[in-house]
Length: 160
Image (cartoon, rainbow, N blue to C red):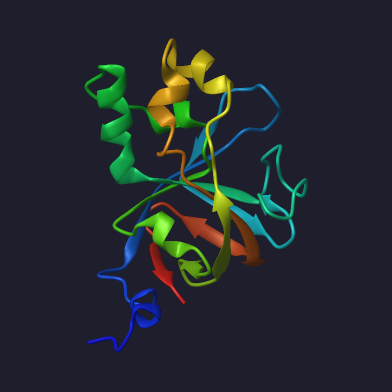
């Protein structure tokens, strides 16, 4: 058992899984769902319009377990992750607990938590009335690429 509260920040109950990958090839375009993607050091996901623009926001990640919550707020039976406009959807690992941590996806890629990913006004367009507020507190996180490579849906996501 960990000796103090600081040690508890290092203990995760299980390994997560990459459930979904998407990119947006150009600003204001619909997302494209992928089964795998190259993650570029100092850039982000190959083919994503955000790639290389912001060192703190190379990649956006969303908690899979939040999708039913957001859908519930909207009064929907389920939610297509493409509507959230996030790059990666991860299950089994509490993304907000990754503050100050690095995660590895698959065998190569490492991402460093850089902050929360707050919803923007485009959520109101994507979801309809109330979409912005449905995502508040459930918008996921942003990350910087530390080590590039290829990731695939189904890859393990673990804290390193």
